[in-house]
Image (cartoon, rainbow, N blue to C red; front, side, top):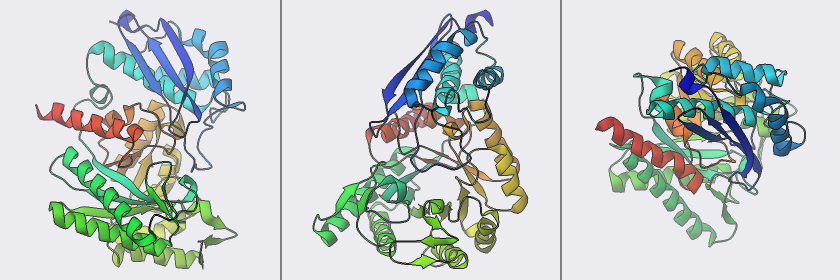
Length: 403
């Protein structure tokens, strides 16, 4: 059995992500199976993320693979996922994958897991998650700005999550909200200054407060039509507009206390159920103030503040900075480290929200990991081929689990 999963060969190549930028895709071959995976790239990144690519970009990652990785992993037992991921760190030799690039390590790590699951004839979600699995609810970006779009809102993402009877119903309702928002924007702006961002969310030259009103209106209208509950949230990505101790919006500036009050008001007064990164990534205490104020009424999700690192999540647990964590594999570079982050959050009673990146590929591993990690939500857009690759796969997975 072990011999069947000896790595016999591997490949790495450059492909394009959804923004048309180069990223890496890897293949790992064992005696009876092959695993293939590609890594996404983020535009809004945390300071403590691993390096997506070494100096020289994706081409330098491929050069490093051919020179240092290909031979070193040949003959390794792919069943030993933890050992494989540790080997990648040893080969890289840095503390943030700056030699090979976190995208290369991510693609190799997931490809290794896929090679084994394919060889065993079981889905990736079952191989990683065993019997303790569940299908998440979809969280989709419907109005965007920040680092994901030009001339949009200061707040990076306004999000919706429909609670349908099935995952298919939920993503269908989410897409209806997206469509309705487009109609509202068209009516208000007569087609002027309307576009879509990196994640296919609507982008318009409107103020944040107006965007919030539009999303709440669209959610209410579609909920009334479909009889499905729709929740609204946001990803502030606050670090991207935090300057000199203040939060600089397009039309106003908030102090730290005003930012905290604004975030709290969205949950207590506007009915939001989720806020991601409402404060600068270094402000554990500011996060904690919001989390304490909203209690069980809202989910406060840390992304840039944790970057899928177990040590930073433990710091957040100690300071009670949030009650949920965003999970992105290529922030930390391997499946093993990602699983450690998920388990650290779970032990504290936190929910995990697994997430795409703004520069995505059509790889569907995110869907499988969301089930394996028992993620509360999967943040993967509402429309767009690279986003639907994950969402439609979850439709299939739910169907499989119901048989």
